[in-house]
Image (cartoon, rainbow, N blue to C red; front, side):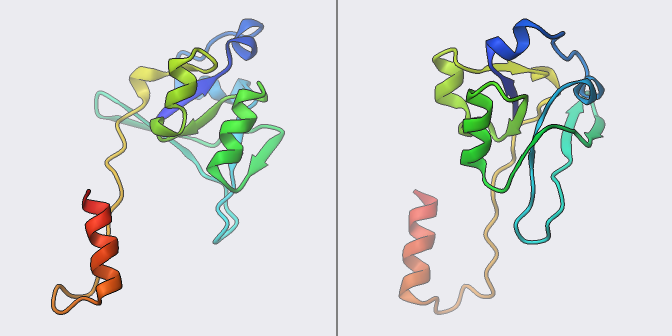
Length: 130
């Protein structure tokens, strides 16, 4: 996971040192399309977990829109690091709270049985393994 902002956004504001500092910032919220709730940002450091309910003027329901809003300097964003990687590498976005952002464990695929999977399912599974 990564919390990021543009250098321009951070130029006029104190950089957050703890997850709780995010409440003083404009953050870009993610609304879950399936149940309408807002994502609570999850941080961890040295076994201590901290969940922060952030505020901001921008709320979207897809990760590409969060990346675009962050690039426009509309606030701090929080997503899996790979969503921001090219922009971090090129200096358009800067990581914050890096020591509080634990690695994303990845996605899991659950399926009912290993017996006789359909050809379509086997193709998807092979593609995911690659």
